[in-house]
Amino acid sequence: MLTLAYNNTAHTDGLGSQLQRLIGIYCVSRTTNTGFLNLGLSKIDYQGLAAVQNNKPHDDLPAKINDLLVMPSNALEMTRYADRIYAEENPALAYLHQFKDFANSRGGPTLLLLTYPFAILDLNPAAYGHAKGLIGKGTIERLKEIDLEAYREIRRPTTETIEISVHVRRGELLLVESQRMLTDNYYIGAIENITKILKALKLPFRISIHSEATNGPITISPKHLRSLNGEKTFDFNADQFKKYQEFENTELRINENPLAALINMATADILIGSRSSFSYVSACAGLNQLSIFPHFWHAAMPNWLEADQETGLFDQILATKLILAHGKYETNPGETRPNWSLNETRNSQRMGV
Image 1: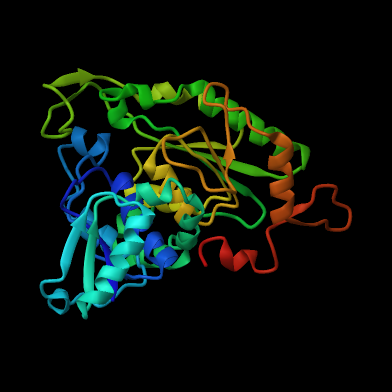
Image 2: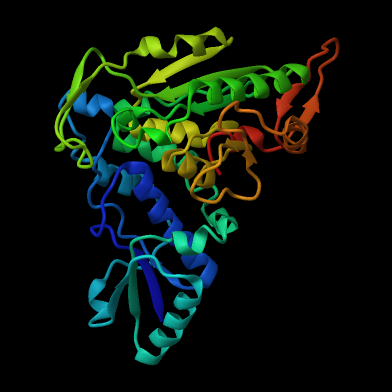
């Protein structure tokens, strides 16, 4: 009798934060055995430095993400709910169970619009496991039809190379809520620690740095970023990422199309995340075999590794065990380096489910 949906007009925000809410509410519905109605996203506010610098916001980005991300959903027939449509901002689990009883007493399909799922999921982060694989092979195939330009930015993995994605969160945090930003020491430390493990295991790897930069000075106003008080001009160019290129086999993916960035991060073998919903969604809805995150205001999933927010240091013994648990080594005659293969079906799973 009860169906949950994201109240997609109550508090619009950036792509990552809204995706975390949408996917989170889907996970709540699976956990509480209620229906789910995918209303998608109606508006995406901040869309990246490139969109601001070029004065070219992606007006069609909500429609594209709605076509791209497919989740099991009830039929979109709002009339069936009649006068049985309600809204709650951020209910607790106990309240939701009570509301199920209320919905049953109404004698007809009832829709509950939620703005946030975090009162439930921050206490039950394992529930995000229902989202695993929502971003995968099918997503890539849909992207080719939806946005060919973004599709061309999809990373082409190889079967023997470990793909490491690193989300260096910058963007609007350079101007507002800068306390959320992590220093380069965190990211570089985490990269050093994971590559040390892979080198010890003689596993080849490739690193992708996903971030944003400006092409010369840029002026941002409240129309681009509503939390900003007045206009601000700043310059944060790609030279800021030179230190990352000191790592071998490293590619800078600066100002990547947001759809491509989401998929590339979600389909990496290893994701080094940030304090970012964009990272969070990539890890919980993607196919990463190992996810490394700093302490975050949203609870981490049980299988993620927590890294020190100052040094990027994490439990290397546990990380090694997790890599070995997901891996099977096959050494060809005369070779001393094992080939990496997650399992018998790894080739079909690398890019999706």
